Image 1 (cartoon, rainbow, N blue to C red):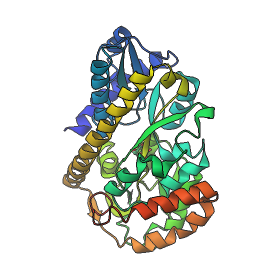
Image 2: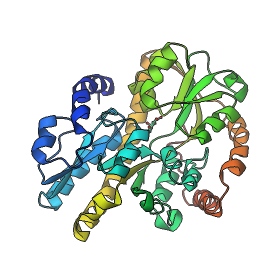
Image 3: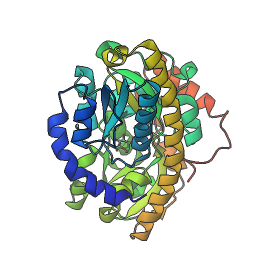
Amino acid sequence: MRLRELAAAGSAALVAVALTACGAGFTTAAAGNASAGGAGAPEAERVFKVAFNQNADQPEAVALTHLGERLAERTDGRYSLEVYPNETLGAQKDTVELVQSGAVDLALVAGSLLENVNPDFVALNMPYVYDSQAHQESVLNDPAITGDLYSSIEDQNVRVLGGFSAGVRSVYNAQHPVETPEDLAGLKIRVMETDTNSRMMDLMGGVGAPMGQGEVYTAIQSGVLDGGENNESIYANLKHDEVAPYYSYTNHLMIPDYLITNPATFGAMSEDDQAVFLEELQKAYEESSALTTEVMTESQKAAEDAGAEFNSPDVEPFREAVQPLLDEKLTTATSRELYDDVRAAAQTTAGTTEGAGR
Ligand code: GCU
């Protein structure tokens, strides 16, 4: 998979699409195909637009594109999906609002953004709450754990259809390898746009700087930021390795990405079609999961070949440093219970080391 080439080729062509795509709601097959915007939506009466902020060959985009193909087949051409990558429909923060207004049908957004809609989502976004990708995947789509969380924001026009594992996040910077929290002192590190992440980075020893993903490269290059924190794929793919060549495996976060829609959009499908969608979504999690493992390894190697330096600090001091965040953020009975249930489920998947164990 040639991640960088695709990223570069995709973004220019897609800017034009974004300008006409917003605000139109559903796209017909003809319009969808003429836009050439997404990753090849199949013919269908209704083509759901899916907002995605990374490039089209990222695991989740590939899995959603395939989901669209299966959906078209299984609904006899009533529905399919078209993924609009590279923030062409907006940065994640905007796409939550576009889903709420019905201008965009579906969006894939990081859990951090949903904290702004219901703060209880924070429980699934806490540092070190998951021990591995397998642990995260075992709880994310288990209603016995998530309870009413995903339907809790329907009155705010957001329905969570399910969660994807999006890799393990670690810090990287332009100055030096990070071995201890002290090494982060004074370093301005980009985090996703919530106070939780900003406060987390402060506790880890650095200075948290909330920002949308699209601006990070230039901000590091110009010295406004010293670095960021993300998985290896985003690091290599968005070429952050060029401007911040020290990647340190603090493994501090595994923020889920959620597929969200507007309850009215989803409710307009027949119950049978909804069931087909949700069944096929299960397969999309599996496909994305397998690809994620593959892509992270490839990306690490690509960044290393391009000159980046990877190191593996002892994560314990970082884990200890963020402990105050638990009391500060898990302030409701629901969020505390969720957090405890996720931790309890770690026992079941104990021994699985892929993901957070690198
Ligand atoms: C990951 C994650 C995205 C998120 C991004 C970010 O790529 O999958 O959902 O937007 O990180 O750091 O902004």
